[in-house]
Amino acid sequence: MSTFQAPKGTYDLIPPRSANFLAVRDAISAPLKNSGYGYIETPGFEDVALFSRGVGESTDIVSKEMYAFETKGGDKLALRPEGTASVLRAALEANLHKAGNLPVKLWYSGSYYRYEKPQAGRYRHFSQVGAEAIGTEDPALDAELIILADQAYRSLGLRQFRILLNSLGDKECRPVYREALQTFLRDLELDEETRRRIEINPLRVLDDKRPDVQKQLTGAPMLRDFLCDACKAYHEEVRDLLTAAGVVYEDDEKLVRGLDYYTRTTFEFVHDGLGSQSAVGGGGRYDGLSEMIGGPSLPSAGWALGVDRTVLALEAEGIELGIPATTSVYAVPLGDEARRVLFGLVTELRKAGIATDFAFGGRGLKGAMKNANRSGARYTIVAGERDLAEGAVQLKDMESGDQEPVALDALVATVQAKLA
Ligand code: HAM
Image 1 (cartoon, rainbow, N blue to C red):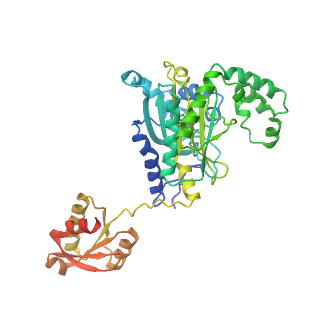
Image 2: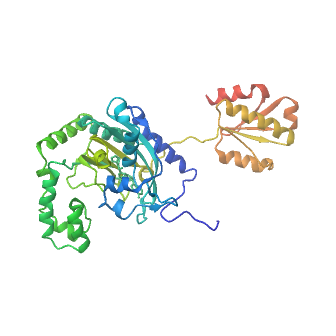
Image 3: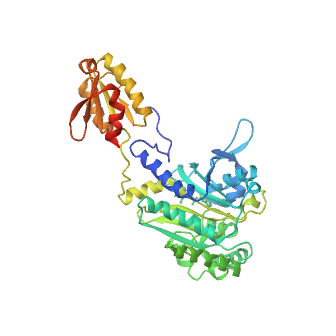
C-alpha cells in the first residue's frame, strides 16, 4: 500500500472486474449504434452556469452536489454532474440541428461527478452511458429510447429490473398543477427545509421518503388529473407503442426526477436487487432545455444508464458475462537465445490477431508456467536451445496437457487453426 488511497466516494476499476465495466458499456451502446445514434464526447468540465441553468438551481445536484471551482484565470467551471446539458450545448455549438435531419441522435459514455454521501451504489465519481435525441417531438422517439435501454439490459441477461413511467406535463399544464400542489402542501406539518422546497420545487416533496411525510401526502393532488389533452394523448401514444413492442412498464405517478428540465415523458429503470440505490438508469423528455440554455426551441428526449449500478445489478443476479480469457497463447523461453526468438514469435502472433503474452523477467520454468496458468491461456509455447536447434518450439495444450513440437515457420498458422 502507498501513502495514498482513492478519494472518498471513488473506487478503482481493476481486473478482472473491470472487464465487466467494458462489457456493460458495450452492451448499452450496441443498440444505440444500431439505431442511428452517433458517438459524441464532451469535456469533463463546463461553465458552471450551464448546469445551474440547465439542471436547475433548486435541484440537489446543483445546489449541494456540484464540484464547482474557479480557475486561476477566473473562469467558473464545474465537473460535469450529468451529460444532457453538455451534449445539448455541444450540439447547438456545432449547429448539428441545422446540418441535417432531425432528430440529431447522439450517444456518449464517460465519467460524472457528484458530491453525494457515499454508500453502496452511490459514488462521487461514476460512469454513465447515455443517449440524447434532439429536435423532435414524437412519442415514437420516447418509445424508441425506452425500448433500446430495455434491449441493452436484456442483452446482458438482467431480469430483475422494472421500468417506471410517468408524464410530468408541459408548460401549459404543469404550472397549474404546481400551484394546486403548493396550496395543498402549505397546510401540512413540515420542517423548515421542506417548507422551502414547497416554494422552489414542490414536486420533489412528493418524492420525500420519510414515512411521516408520506403519510401526510395522502390526498395530495396528482399531476395525472391535471395533464392537458395534448399531454394526455402524447403519453397514451408512448404507452401504446411500448406495449406493442412487448416492453413491460409500470405507471408511477409519483416518479419525479431529480433534474428540473423534464417535460412530459419521464422514466426510470430500477433494479430490485440493489437496496436503496435502485435506479440503474433514467431519463425523459426535455422540451424546454434548449431555450433554458439560450438555444432555439428543440424538443428532445434521452436517458443515461449508470454503468456502476448496472455492474452491481449483474452481480446481484449472479450473472457471469462469460468474458473469455484475454490471453490465448503464453510464451515461455528457456535461455537467452530462446528469449530473442520467442519474443519475435510473440510479436508475429499478435500481428495475426492472436492474444499473446510473454514470460518477462527471465524467471525459471516453474514460475513462468505458473504465470502461464494464471493468464488463462489455452496454449503455451516453450522453447529451449535443443528445440531451436531443430527449428521448432513445443506447443502445449493447457487443457489436455498434450505437447507437440511445431516448426517455427508453421507456428502462427498452426495456432490459428487450433484456436479457430
Ligand atoms: P440521473 O437519473 O441523474 O439522470 O442519472 C442516471 C443514472 O446514473 C442513475 O440512474 C444512476 O444509475 C447513475 N447515477 C447517478 N448518480 C450516481 C451516483 N452518485 N453513483 C452511481 N451512479 C449514479 C441523468 O443524469 C440525466 N442526464 C439522464 C438523461 C439523459 N435525461 C435525459 N437525457
